[in-house]
Image (spheres, rainbow, N blue to C red):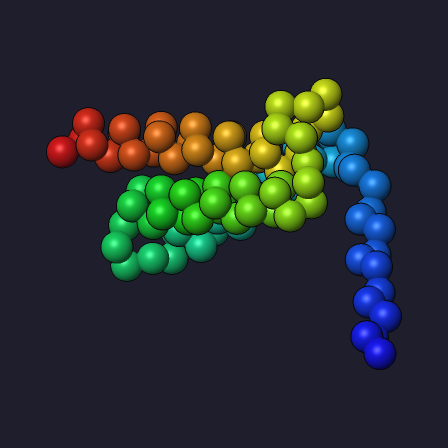
Length: 97
């Protein structure tokens, strides 16, 4: 006899856009705090942390089955914002050389 498989629990409801903006702002402040205490330089560390955060947001958006570019802000929008900030920081680092 095969064991009965449990169904996956329901995902929590989506957050409102202002809650996602607050989450994103707090995430950037925490990343900047970690980057400030690095030995390899603030810009290089911030760029690496932003890239890792973008990947994490994309994976989270995939696992939560969120629609990219939907009507409400979600993890995909956070990933795009982190990618944009990564490109900005990386461009500033390259122009300073």
